[in-house]
Image (tube, rainbow over all chains, first blue to last red; front, top):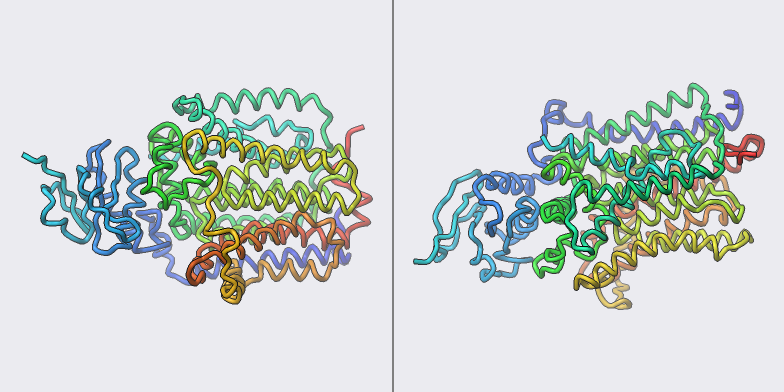
Length: 151
Length: 454
């Protein structure tokens, strides 16, 4: 059923296969451009080689998880508005049984929401001095605080 | 370790849709293409079940989500297995072509697996909303309508159809939690699952060698672009699966009025449940198929078009009805007033759009099929479903960018590599059919791949 090697149809097939092999060069070249041991290191977060900044933030949230009671509310504060927003967005998935409340949303401060949270995850910055909090744990890049009930 | 259970849940999807493997249009196509058809039915029916259970205020569980698709699949399978199947000739590519294709496939999929597995192509949106919704849906055992309504979840595109999040939540339910690092790897499954059915459909019109060569190019190009566009864990691979197979089925279908439209209609239903762009693509593909049928003077055009359009329309209406029932904004939100266009952005959009179509291969993934297409000079009418998808998606993107309030360069860089993937896929299929359809027509006529049973 297949044409012989000299058949024009066979040459056409070869042309497509050569083109397919040519495409394969690109991912192989990308793999060989970096040291193999660096590439074989198992990722710690889903974003290790996609976005180092977000990978650090995700790692921070994962570090906080054991210290946050399930079904509680929490808020994330950060040293800059972009980090606060991305941490907030990711915290909704990272704490699926909790209620993350934004302390800022797209750069707009929403402290009235953040103040309601039982836990405050502070990323690379201390929490506001007027929030009644107690330190729960220190983790890499930040700390977890719990709200102290008003007397 | 939650990932093995998550993987097992995804691999069980073809079981939920096994009835599709008995449809006359695919029953003789071989095991792997039948699994791809079953996967699509399983994914669509599971998504609809997830929506309907929440509608009925019934909590999700593995048995509750699995039972309706299994029952529907069983009934459909029994019904379809009694019908006469299209007979496919045995797959017999020449040895050299088969080995070359196997090498290309292995290299492409391994590179994609490596990239996804080492967290090198994860979509940021997966951690911002796709996976977030899945984790929350699994936690509340249903579509979390309170979350979708919440003013502080506007970033989570609550209007998006729920297909991806329901399938990921199904895996998370089985696994007991969301295996965040593993889920992006599963994007590879959609590419790997589509390839055998792409090959099988191409064999309806091309010789085994030609179909194998085109499918090899397709899998190389799509594997690279999935990685390059950071499509791990988001909707893109799933959307690529559905849209590619819809176009492939339409490009290779018989001219006869009673030719089945089960497969393309099922794929379009999957596309509209996956992402907003799936609806735009569906409109384009349906229009392209209808125009082709009209120009080629095929009979019963209205009936054929309705058979193609009604299943995706029903799925879309189901989602809109769900939105309405739960007080969500009905429909899809736009980026501004419909005709509030910033025409001064046109040069930026064209420049940045083209720049971001390199597909991880210095534009070769596009340029090679375009060169084949131009040199084949095919009858464009036959390829209209593919051309309509390419034009429709490009037009949709440009129209969308024209609504931006500020310079859209950054957003073009984020979205064009992802959203253009189905158009690239359609371009490759059209080029392959044009190139070999012209050169191998004698062989095509003498040895059709699918013959109706006597």
